[in-house]
Amino acid sequence: MSAATPLLLIDGVVKRFGGLVATDHARVEVLPGEVHALIGPNGAGKTTLIHQISGALAPDGGRIVFGGVDVTRLPMHERVLRGLARSYQITSIFKRLSVLDNLALAVQARSGSSFSFWRPVRGERARHDEAAAVGARIGLGHRLDALAGTLAHGEQRQLEVGLALATRPQLMLLDEPMAGMGPDESARMVQLLRGLRDEVTLLLVEHDMDAVFKLADRISTLVAGRVIATGAVEEIRAHPEVRRAYLGDEEALP
Ligand SMILES: Nc1ncnc2c1ncn2[C@@H]1O[C@H](COP(=O)(O)OP(=O)(O)OP(=O)(O)O)[C@@H](O)[C@H]1O
Image (tube, rainbow, N blue to C red; front, side, top):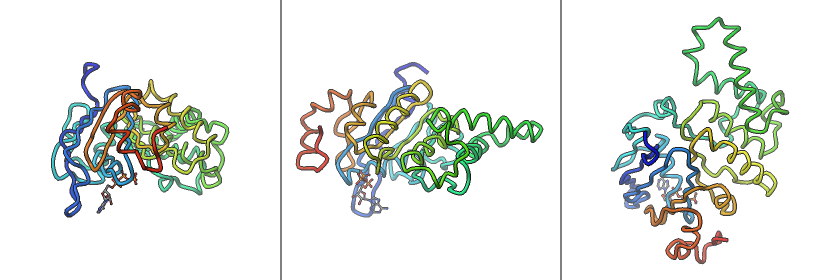
């Protein structure tokens, strides 16, 4: 695949809820290796688009192409197997299991069949080694034995990223990874996501514009289901239509 070929192509996607067009012929190209942010005012259709990419919602029109394959009609688990992972909100964490066991389960979900060729004990050790490595990667190396339910909010969000990372995705979808975080936790998450850039392509929805501007290579702006602009950070910051969309909005662009 050449550098210019998008890893993910959202091509003319349409989604209607009754009379409301929540996704209006949206086109977004996510290039391999980039951090691509999806921004837009409340109700612009960001989450609806992410749901269609992950497979939680079926579009009414258009195509979603991942790694050159049309995945528009594929169920969610088949998209995950192809390397498209979504980091879920805290609900995906087993709070009464340790951080390490949570990660080991995610590793197992990805590698279940291949590990079955190995003797169980060896398989289990390999799984735990890999889970521990992911734990270190997400900054929870010192918390591997803690019960997930006892982690601070920011740490739980780090663990969610780890659960998605353990499936060894090519593209990770992140829906508001900084939500509910204080400045320190948010800065840690920015650090963590920056550290993943060599490993995985990221598509994130985020309201925290400071974080978006620190992290993103490119930004697509949605307004009323339409992509009104895609470009590099400075281009989007200065874009008159984007500024207009945020004017009067409580999350005005910094
Ligand atoms: N299941 C649904 N049924 C009907 N309307 C829906 C449904 N889901 C979303 N909508 C509507 O579609 C539009 C887009 O919603 P969506 O949640 O995707 O926006 P968003 O950009 O993620 O908003 P926010 O930033 O507030 O999370 C909104 O008008 C919303 O009310």
